[in-house]
Amino acid sequence: MIEVIDLHKTFDAPRWPWQRRDRHEALAGVSFACRPGRIFCLLGPNGAGKTTTLRLIAALLRPTAGTVRVNGFDVVRDPEAVKRQLGFLTGATALYDRLTPNELVRYYAELHDVPAKQWRRMQADLFELLGMRAYANRRIGKLSTGMKQKVSIVRTMIHDPNVLVFDEVTAGLDVIAARSIIDLVRRCREAGKTVIFSTHRMDEVSLLADDLAIMHQGRLCYVGSYPAFLAQMRTASLEDEFIRIVEESALAQNGQPRMPDFKLSAVGVR
Image (cartoon, rainbow, N blue to C red; front, side, top):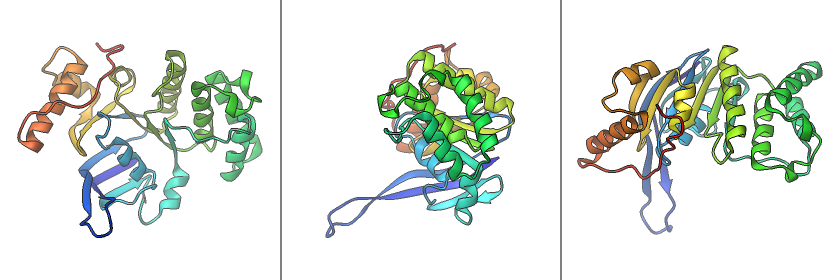
C-alpha cells in the first residue's frame, strides 16, 4: 500500500551566487492512497508534478513537508526499506549497452539477493510474456527503444516487489510494445500488487484505472475511483472532462482561465 499525506516539495531554482534564490513549489498538499490489487492512475500534463510525486514515493527525493509510507515504511525514516518494497520504472531507460538482457537481469537479481532458482523462473516468465526470447542474448546497445523498455521492466520486477511505480512507461513506444506493457500492468493487479501508473494518455486511463487522480500545477484536481469519475462527468468524452477539470483548477489557482500546455492522445477514448 502507498499512503501520501499532505505532500509538499519545493525546489531552489539555480541562480548566480549574488542573486536571491527563486523557489519553485512542485507539489502543494498532495494526498491519496494506492491499495493492493488496484491500479491507481496519476493523470496530468507534462510538468504537473507526476514524476516528482513518484520519485518521492520511491525515496529518490526527500519531501519538503508531508508524509509518504510504502507498506508501512516511511520514505524519510527508512528509505532503504521502502526501496526494497518497490520496483520503479520510468520511460527513460538507462541500461548497460554492452550487456545482453540475460546478463543484465542476472546482475540485478544478484544485487537484490534473489535466489537463482527464483529469478530464473521469474525471468523466463517475463521474457515469455513480453516476447523477449528472440533477443535475450543480443547486446542491449543494438536493441530498439521498445526492446530496451522491456528489458527495463524485467530488471524492475526481477525481485518480485509488492509495490510497482510506473512513470509514463509507454512514452515513445509503438502500439504493440505499449500493449504488452499494459497487459503486464494488468497482470500485476491480478497478482494483488499495489500499482501506481502515471500517464498523460486518456486511452491508458480507460484501459487500466481502478482509481484516478488528476494533477495540475502540483495540486490534485480530482481524487477518487474511476467509476465515480465517470459518474460525475459533465462532458461527452474523457478528454473533454479532463480539460474541463484542469481549466477549473487553473482558474481557482490563478484567478483566470488558463489553457493547459499539452496535447492529449485521444486513442481509444470513449
